Length: 332
Ligand code: TRP
Image (cartoon, rainbow, N blue to C red):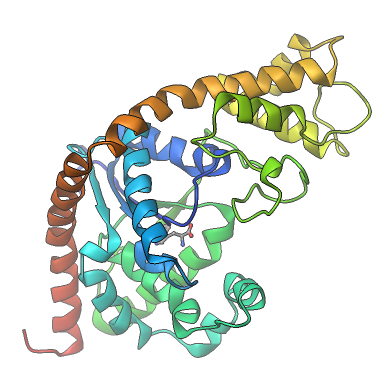
């Protein structure tokens, strides 16, 4: 590889439900930052979303909404590839091929499958089981060097790497084996109501999570109610999960260190701190929300953008798929 060639990055996000502050600080903020340094391909993983039952009208809305939000974040579709997974048929096609190189046993060991089977006991479908194979296809089609993933997706990236290594072992070098990318910025955001758990939009208590599209009042109200400890000292501590979380959020947004934050709130109570964090979050999200409103109001423009993205993605995806098919022995 030439040294002046940018490394390739691939990531996808599901369009299920509202994106949260956790998605933003845990992943999306890095999607935006990475686009200057890397050659990035980003997709809305709509095929993954139907492993749990979706209402058609709602799913449609969420796909549009996720595209609009990615654009609002500042992801530039001219210099990156931004598309909807189901628009590039090669994802489903490669997923089938790879499923014949993936063992029942290794899929059975996936923690997310075990968790989701418990949660959706009435709908343990084959798609839920083979979900990591589709994810492997998403990744391997684009030969990325790096895949940014959160802790909960690490096991899935690991299996994608295993599949790639196995396939390469049989047929020669077909796939780039991607590395996980752990970003320097951002934060792992915990629930505001139970800071031992990750912030999640599926949490029934709406005060536990902040949506990227929440109003300023809602955001501040949720932060005011955030669960903390009784020490009343803004600093990192072992038994201060709530405060640690708020410091992490404030730090990710302002770039201030935990020590700076402790100094800033010396002698002040948690009330002040919570309001400051809430205001900083609202202020961070405000310009994104404004841009989101313009993108979502113009469906035609949105469609033009994701269709163009699919054409670009298709080109790379087709090349990999043809190579794989030839190697396996299909006639083209
Ligand atoms: N499974 C990921 C999630 O739920 C989304 C995803 C689908 C993904 N395909 C991917 C992430 C490929 C990274 C790479 O978060």
